[in-house]
Length: 119
Image (cartoon, rainbow, N blue to C red; front, side, top):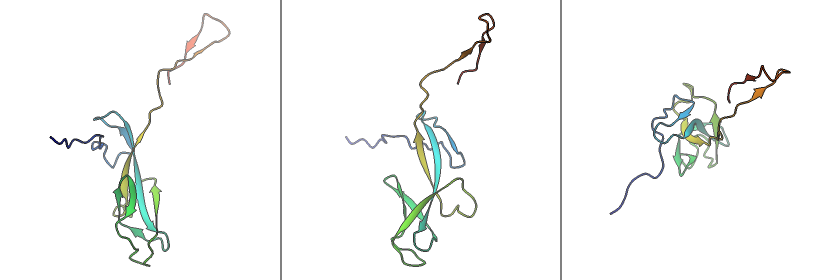
C-alpha cells in the first residue's frame, strides 16, 4: 500500500517565540528566521507564504502600484507592526562540534598544572 509518512521532521515543538533550540523529536538544532515580503517598486508589505522552501508573495501583483517584482527581507525579531505580514522559516543548523576538547596550561612547573574548562 501507499505510505503517507513524512520523511523529515517538521520541528513542530520549536515554537515561533523561540530564537533557536534543539528539536526534541529529531535532535537537530533549529533556528527560527522571520521573513517579510515587500514590493520591489514601492516597498509596501505583502502577505506571503512558503512554497517549496522559498518565501513568495501571495499575489502576483502589488495591490498598491501593480508591480510584479517582490523582495524578501530577513527580520532580526518579530514585532507587533510586522506580525500580520511576517512568516517564520525553521532552518536547521549543522552542529560542527564533533568531540570534547580540554586544554592544559603550564605555570612554569610540572607539578602545578591547571585544567581549563572544556569547550
